[in-house]
Image 1 (cartoon, helix red, strand yellow):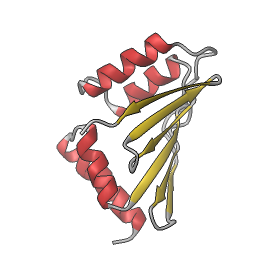
Image 2 (cartoon, one colour):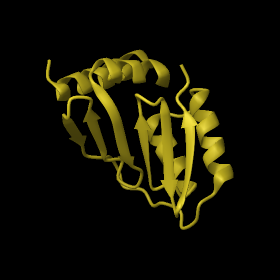
Image 3 (cartoon, helix red, strand yellow):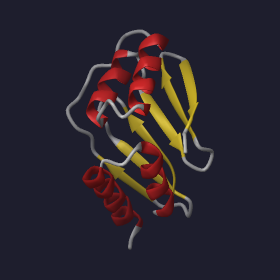
Image 4 (tube, one colour):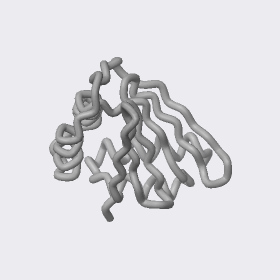
Length: 127
């Protein structure tokens, strides 16, 4: 299976099974993904493989990123996401409201780094 097809398959399995994020990360890792970066405003995503492969996906409906960073809103969004209370679109909306412009999930390092307005916030990917 190609790198791109493996990512599409992992996303379909996550959607069909409503997998929690750590299980989805495991599927992406099995597909060969080292990291992926998401543009919050456009939801465009770029995946980078451990063997130099790449795969890009266009986003969904555009959203406006808040004009200032708000750590409290970001923290609430991350906590709600961990509890499984937000789907992807709702999570992106909350990130945009917190002033986050992009994030990178570094699967090998098991960390997600959120960035916006010159600020960054890192969180561990739970198992």
